[in-house]
Image (cartoon, rainbow, N blue to C red; front, side, top):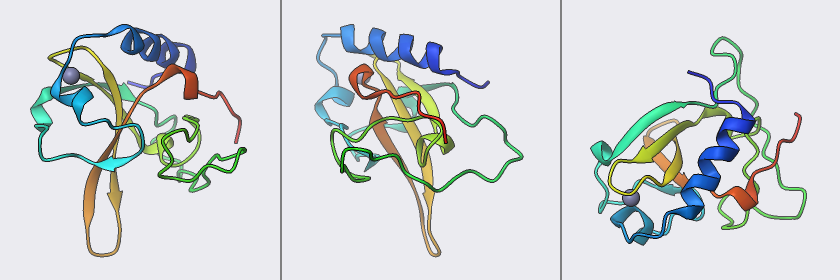
Length: 127
Ligand SMILES: [Zn+2]
């Protein structure tokens, strides 16, 4: 199921309201990171995806108008840009916080990476 910007924003706002401690929050996934060993895959429910068209070749452009980088904590979350445009939206079953997750595939490896969905970083930027 495709998740549009308005829905994503609601999820991010709900996430920001969660105050209970949780292993997912303790992992501090502010920037894209490999799924930490402290977190189990089954701790997260998949809610939908930011892939708008599964048949289109996703853009590899990143969105950094303010000089952030891929691994910056404060890099914008722009759903049409890499790697958000490959991501699933997942929710922690223990605390309800939301995350983005995608499979980073290189020549010789693939690894799941996750990032916290934070409302203050969301940008509805066109490609
Ligand atoms: Zn959690």
